[in-house]
Amino acid sequence: MHSQTPFAGKRYNTYGRFLRERFGGRVYKVSVDGGFSCPNRDGTVGTGGCIYCNNSSFRPKSASRLKPVAAQVLAGMEYIKKRYGAEKFIVYFQPFSNTHAPLEDLIPLYESAIDHPDIVGLSVGTRPDCIDDDKIAWFENLARTLFVTLEYGLQSTYDDTLKRINRGHDYGCWLDAMRRTRDRGIWIGTHLILGFPWETREEILKSAKAISDRGIDFLKLHHLHVVKNTAMERDYRNNPFHLMALDEYVELAVDYLERLNPAIRIERLLGSAPPDQLIGPVWDAGKGEIRHRIEHRLKERNTWQGRLYPS
Image 1 (tube, rainbow, N blue to C red):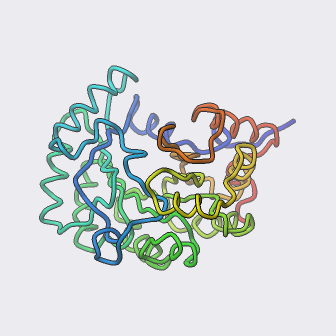
Image 2 (cartoon, helix red, strand yellow):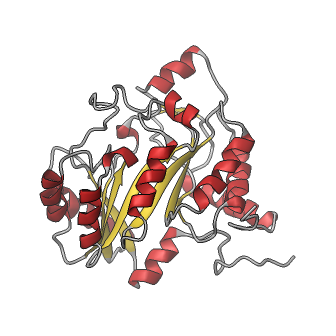
């Protein structure tokens, strides 16, 4: 069986390979907590936050807002060096919305985080409604000397879904942030959740086309999962809804990759949560095995990222 995959042994465009080729060695992200909130939590646009969100379910132990950011960076670097043999690092402002503050407050925080010779990049997770032209201009200037990524959380391209999950912004807001950030020397990532029970399979797959030509460099895909201490947990316990089985998600991820622009690097293929916080779906497989299953299914189907792009 002949394969035309363009990804040098892989069947999708991996973020890890991109980093190795760009920096010539092992590059890992160091997650830090800058002490931010979100505009849909603190009353700026709403309260309660996204209905699925419990930040403690994905925050590394080294990212503690009780420590200064510089101390978090050093602790994270030390741990990753020992465990993975990393040589260079990207500081990742991960929990909550990390541009949700005035620029004059953000600058010293970012500068303290990147003040180390082994740091080659800054990645900032935020929302499209927490960015403005002055902030983008500052990141653009920094990107002349450092690898800079803005990660805009989106989760869905459908306004009905964004309303139901209490995002506090619409799809048009994300499109506007993308428009203003493109072609400024800043790398752009985004996050999508696959598997909201009210979205049809056809709608989910159409979202691959919706985002493919918007200028995204990196994409994180997450399967919908329910964690403790969230509004979604309460909804699920009161009125259980469908959560995908592992084989169902594997097939959906392969179908999604087929329709996605092959130039987009895939940073993540699934979500995760600590077992003591996860309500469901509970799959009898670790993250590495799930990635392997997706890769194996791509091979079985003799397909690859972008095979059906554009469609």
